[in-house]
Amino acid sequence: EIVLTQSPDFQSVTPKEKVTITCRASQSIGSSLHWYQQKPDQSPKLLIKYASQSISGVPSRFSGSGSGTDFTLTINSLEAEDAAAYYCHQSSSFPLTFGGGTKVEIK
Amino acid sequence: EVQLVQSGAEVKKPGESLKISCKGSGYSFTSYWIGWVRQMPGKGLEWMGIIYPGDSDTRYSPSFQGQVTISADKSISTAYLQWSSLKASDTAMYYCARHDGATGFFGDYWGQGTLVTVSS
Image 1 (cartoon, rainbow over the protein chains, first blue to last red):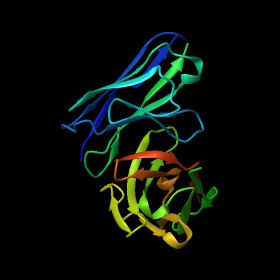
Image 2 (image 1 turned 45 degrees about the vertical axis):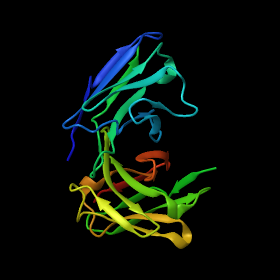
Image 3 (image 1 turned 135 degrees about the horizontal axis):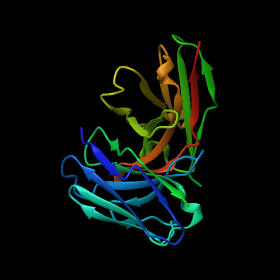
Image 4 (image 1 turned 90 degrees about the vertical axis):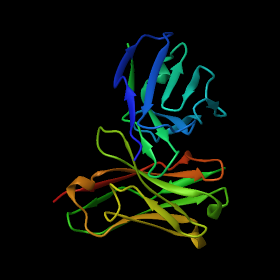
């Protein structure tokens, strides 16, 4: 089973700051890494697919990068509405797995 | 419009059985996989398993194999997650999500979640 390790677990950020969340896989997964946002009391929402591919309707301040074992989600110029938990997810092999999540709080 | 609508919240006692549902609409139900994800109170997302309604091909996470059963009825575009004997530790929110196996196993559309509470 591929283990995904996210860091940090928690981040408190002021609006307009840049946020960087990392996700490390226990073995190479190519670019089969996806990112989700989950706001309080809502279902998860797909933000980025295949490490860096944008999703229609997702603000351009969200971007992803990486391949192999190391991946990054970047939120440029954080907005208040971005307060949420963020999860990485690998689809390289079954069982599919999620990272532990990163909670982003707005100061 | 693609929609996944899940069944309502459930309150059960330990040892009872339960089957929750996820009904897809707005797309060809038999052409996409449906996955199930658990979220325990205050915790992260856990991938449980996935089914392809077209031929009922099903894969489970080892953590959930033997603990739950995933099934689908393609005639009514509905996937199911069931337990034969619930435990208090099954208390959680459960989400279903559509996955396009052809382009990748990521959840592009999600249900609203079903809260399952198991308490004596």
